[in-house]
Each structure stands twice: as C-alpha cells, then as structure tokens.
Length: 77
Image (tube, rainbow, N blue to C red; front, side):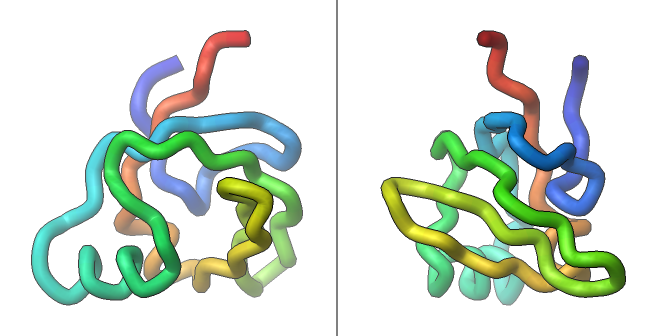
C-alpha cells in the first residue's frame, strides 16, 4: 500500500496519519484536530474541493492544499 497524501485517499477507507510537516502546516492540521498517529476515515471527496474526513465522531473538511501535505497510510482491515 505505502504512503499516500490525504488528497490521494479513497472514500470509505481508513488511514493512519503518518507525518505532517512542522511549522505552519502542522499548526493548521492541529487546529482541525488532526495529529500524527491518528486514525481517520475518508467520508467524501468533493471534486476540486475539500476532503471530508471522520475522526472521533467528528466530520472535518480539509482543503486540498493542506491535504496534499499530510502523509497517510491505509489501515489493514
């Protein structure tokens, strides 16, 4: 499977956040409540829009530019 970025994720699959670049990108992700090591499930992928993820019963919309910088890996089922 390997490492992907969040904007490459597929709807309905669960991933673990592997890395988030330090600095501004990490600060933005933390504001959304997204941290390294957390499991997320992709809910919706809006064409040319945000990626909607589910984490701890929350629905979070992450913009494409931020999603391109968050490394994820699919969780084995």
